[in-house]
Amino acid sequence: MSSSTTESKLSTIYYPLTANPAGHHHLLLAESVLWNFPETQLVVFLLSNGLHPDPLKQQQIPSAALRLNILQSALNDWSDPKKSLPAKIAEDSGIHLKLRKSNSAISHRELAINRPMRLAEHIKSFSGSEKVRMIVGADLLERMLNPQIFTDLDLVEIERNCHLLLAPRNEVEIVTILQHLMKKRGVNLSATLIKTERFTKNLQRFFLISSTIIRRAAQAGHDLTTFLPSTAVLQLLQNSLYVKTRQPFWIKNSNLNELQLRCHELMEQLDEAAKQLQKLLNKRKIQKQPHRFSVVETSTGGQIAEGFTSCSGASKHFLDGRILYSQEAQKKFLRRSTFADSSVSQTRAQDLAVTMRKRSGADWALAETGMAGPPSSERRSKKNGQCHLGLALSSAVRYKCLEFNPFLTRKEHQLLFAIEALNWAENVLQN
Image: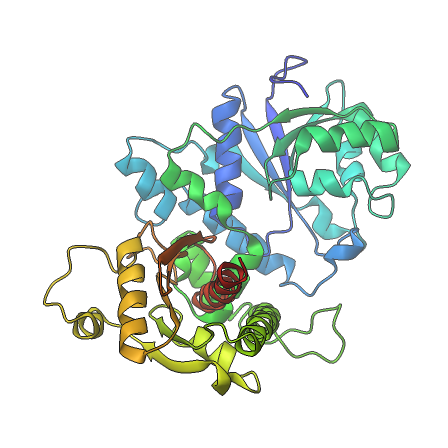
């Protein structure tokens, strides 16, 4: 993989996009290209018609006209600190964003075609004497290994007429994938990795967003200005996009929307974590080892206790559960007038666990304190998605810190915190 593109000037770069919907992460990626390749004169977004050639991507999406309007307004607002949170953060850091109306465009070409349009077709239509420069996510590169998604003819066209600008995604090992493509599919793709390190961490965090995360946030009723520029948010809300239930194509007879489906999956994981812990505690009880416990929760709002007490026979082990949601409630519980520490910290989690064990008379106590969100343009906490766990045993107090994607919904964070808390407790007791 080359570190620079010297074959020709990058006057125009193409960016295939479903835009379902287009968010800060898409625009920041285009912004990254302009910083990586300052000779770029134009970034062209290739808006999908929604008929996806990838069989794994078939789903019901908004009309092309709606997606086009949202993308256009997002581009118009992107560099305006009054309408775009990343632009505001950039301005505060002394950075001026480059992506503007003057150096971006949206291609409507695919919208006139009533069939799935392949990446290779786009490349063929735009190629000439120079290779087409195309922005591609590392996850799409990985799917090139699948001949059902990318045919041999597709890959030959990409190899011959395209230089890929690869965006890091989901910890995909790009170099390894390129090697596999050479070995298994017989193609040596020309590619350059888009570097994102030049931005501050406050800006880089927007790469953690995805269209799926935006849709779930809309379904949860969260503040969407964290995810999209303000005019795009208004359009999304006015058209009530994503809030209605949709039937996923892979689950028949399901009326769950994406957020509900994800939470259902997480609740099943929570149920399994509770069962595994109960299995261990049953064994400890038979062996006459300490097994009775209590739980004190803050951000999870009772998900840990509910998860465990849903198991039949939970009363053999579970003594007490408390939800100390406010600072005042925690002060009263810990018998303090003030706090020197943060409510989301190691010391708070451990203090809560120790106090809960003493108050309840349990053999051990589990405490959780975290920040489940949701993300908001008003509250820019760096601790969103962070959870601290304390486990008070007879001889020691254990501690663990968890960090999840800060842009997940509040419900997702709560369930993830609870799952990890039960799994961690089981692991500590097992070992």
